[in-house]
Image 1 (tube, rainbow, N blue to C red):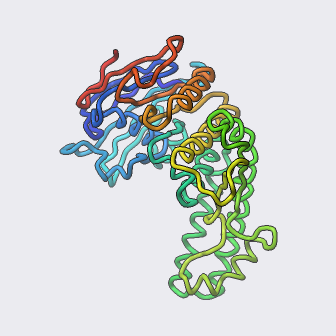
Image 2 (cartoon, helix red, strand yellow):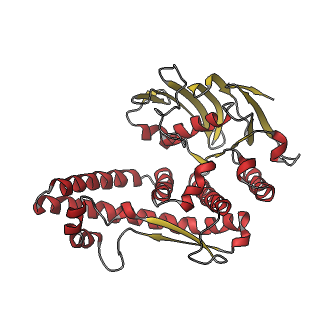
Image 3 (cartoon, helix red, strand yellow):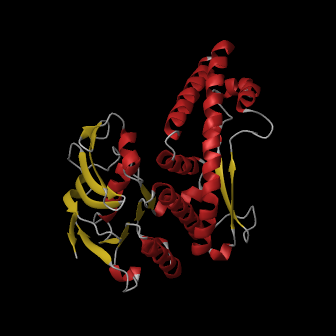
Length: 361
């Protein structure tokens, strides 16, 4: 997809700006606090329904403004299809339009515009708990598998109902009903995720070899969240019922699933350094972006925040070389243009950002 226009109003320090991005590399250059990361946040908000730096109500709206407003227009399939989206978000309430029609759920906007974001907190994909990795898998499935969202919603509803019954001391007969529903949805959710992990595997290996060859071949696996080889999910829920009653929540199921990523040259129990975690997370994100391209016929937007600070020269050059060759539309923030050390052959669109104002170079 190719973003052709982005209007931002009242996002952090940005009062009102309009960008006309180029088709390849787009560089947002400015001092710290100038507003360049806010541009990526705006795109991330349209693609995910939230910012990568917290909730909308926690400082994303410019001080004194009642709400932020975003508008984006982009093309798909080499310009044969065009879309536009508008969003007004006040923190506790929002209104959105997609291709001229009102939308009832934020997920409708997020389905339309796809973006993969690498930012200073992305290392948590490897160093943090399982929730970010589950979100990564579900985001990918959300965009490439039409049957996934109804299954995910069905599972989320059943899990919520079962947990409420456990906390309230509900009768076994009532739990039987929701155990059946949770098991049906959970097994389906698990099948989608396992299939997706298998599809990602060669792409993760490829990007890991490109970015961190010193760690050896990437090795990853998937933990379903219960002992699937021994028990069906229905049996696991029944076996754990009394324990779950005591704890007040469900302890087995896809909501406890995890994606594992290791490397042949790294001992299994030895943690990655922060820098290595960033590169491994980037390999996962780019593998997901490439899978999107393979299934949808085009790349999602690639958002890279503060790239010169996050990656050293060698890794940065390897990444940008691969992205330029891919034809993806990429947005990169940085404090100095020279620090990115771009190849002169790469054509880039440069924007200078200062005090919330953005102008082409």
